[in-house]
Length: 470
Image 1: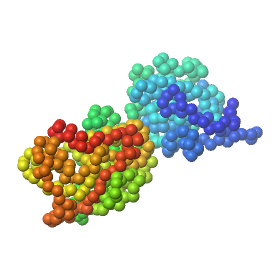
Image 2 (image 1 turned 135 degrees about the vertical axis):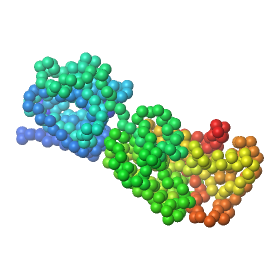
Image 3 (image 1 turned 120 degrees about the horizontal axis):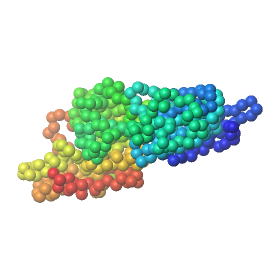
């Protein structure tokens, strides 16, 4: 009999993410009423905001109707409108909880949230039982499903009515035992821009993780709108956007301006829409160029953006778009050093060749090595840190480009005084092509990323380590 007068409450079960809910039901002699799904109240009570897109009802005439055990790549919110069921749930996801069982009776005053990959089954305990479930994806023949035999001896569900005495479909009878089940894999991570400096560092830190995919520009070009239809996005849990148009000076030309806006804004907007519509965590890498560099002190995540040039404007616009995605991390960084041609390698090469360069001495910041950015991104995603914007650069004393160049010369065994100091205006005085304005202060405050559990490496120590490995 349906229990009236309960308070809304959510209780964890033995299966991670499987949540049992007690529902308030209001009734009198005329019947009863309940809010079967009320987003605001239920999310506040502890249910995930799983964004259902479809509501299904299975009506069962007889006592003992038995269905399952089916695991799909989407979440479910299971309840009954009339009648009563005995439900059995088995974790069929890859991982340490594979094969864990939970059972409970469900009537109109109780419901259960079934996360992606947990096998769902039930047996009716009353006639005329209407079994209802909301799901957050549409059925697709291309999705990955998994099934377990109702009579599996390993999980050994204690069905109230023996399976020999109930009607079971031929398909359910043919499902495999646990030892032969294909587990549901975790949602995938997609790294975009996988051939760039940060993309290569992400390849290293994720190594051979089977659930991480990598897309180069040849595979997925943010400036090409057709990429939106290139994948079944519901299969992804995280997108890491390590791609960007970064030619800051060329961006000041008509052609460069168009290319920068196409990749850094239009393409990012399409990714943001995909992430928002599919519940994907969107990691987006931003830049110190969103600031004008006039602040006295380190920039925090909350400081207003004031970009000076086209590149900075496109990055600021991209940040604003990404901030609307419910699950997002915006990673602001500066002076990035990784594989391929970069400032540090250029200075080391000039030192060895006997060249005495003049280097800008009125722009200040910290180097950021791509392996540190990659480690910080992985930490934020896997630790479940609060969504939002995080500054992520090297730590330590803020230096000018000239001071860093002298550190490079010293580290490779050459006289640091060979590096001359010039102003930005002097350095670009002879330029014949457009030059983007640079922020004089690129120092970013690191308090928030440190509070989230990731302590960036000291950039001067990281510089010496980098040069020693070359």
